[in-house]
Image 1 (cartoon, one colour):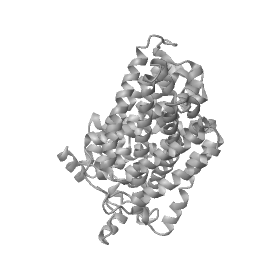
Image 2: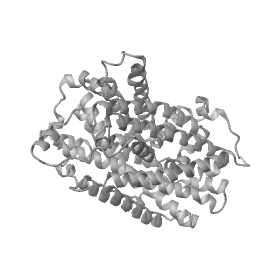
Image 3: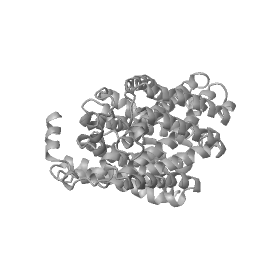
Image 4: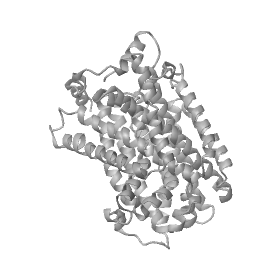
Length: 491
């Protein structure tokens, strides 16, 4: 394991910059991976945007993006094996490629998480209000107020410590998955399908009408669907046998959400009309519409509970992801050192948590004046999609560079260390480049502008001589034989 120079100097000076280690097992890690991708939330909040981009091609967009995404999952799995660092790609990309690219990778996580916490609160408030009235669910003021309340509750849970967070996640995610499976079965075996099932929905030819622009728009949204499973890597300093458990937990979590996304995208194609799928009033709660279609009345409202639990869960995991990343940046002095402080008892990054809570609430309230909920959500998803593509691509390239001496030692190494991550990297880069001309000015300003802001702390840190920006010695920019021998011995 490579430890940053800043972390070493902190330890030598007697400062405490350590999270609570060895408290999460494989089941905990897998649950966090599922919660991070937030299946019910992603389906509820993004289905209308996906249908607008590719019509009935949603299953195909999720399938092809999912294949590429698993290349990134395998990259994270192998990177975790040689470097257990709460900054994850922030540390890995630095070691394999360059410190500036490493910081940009970590900064992408920070800004994407911050944007997400602003837009994620809308479905939380909308879901609760839809239990009582569809009119109330469209009231942006009430949605904002309730969303802020739920967000503050999640801040409290995260601040209480990782063991509390995981316990809450296990309860919420198990209930969420149970409801999702129930309503998937109700939709699939529903007495009246408005559209007949077609294998064409999974074929590349389904994008014929929308062309390549439709495919990349769908792929960008699909990347947002999957995003979040990598929170397991940001928790690796707090995980038992982290070299194995964190990566495997992310793999299991990604597999579960892939299946759920495909099943529900097919389900909405079957039972909902194009008018329902394109109605902007359904942008934040399309699963409520589906629930009422397959189980009218209070029974159909049960799926709203799944959306609410999923939203709360993903707010928690996103808070964890961004606060752990900021914590490592503070510990490495690439951002203010105060961010690297932990609570003496809870062992949580208290300063980073408070900062993110304040910034998120300010941005969330300000977003009321940007436009409709539908516009805010669509622009937000696309902006995050750009940032996701960037840091996932860098991580995939990093695993190839770091393991270059092992790539051709076996068929498994060739497939999972080189070929599949390379497919993921090329796919993410392709989507990033091709989608930009078709995005709105707001999406570009938020997506690329937020990334560009990262140049400021890079320059400041470089001028101040932060140890993080020292180039990693050439012999460490490859997985060491000793590391791999120890790894194999522990598997």
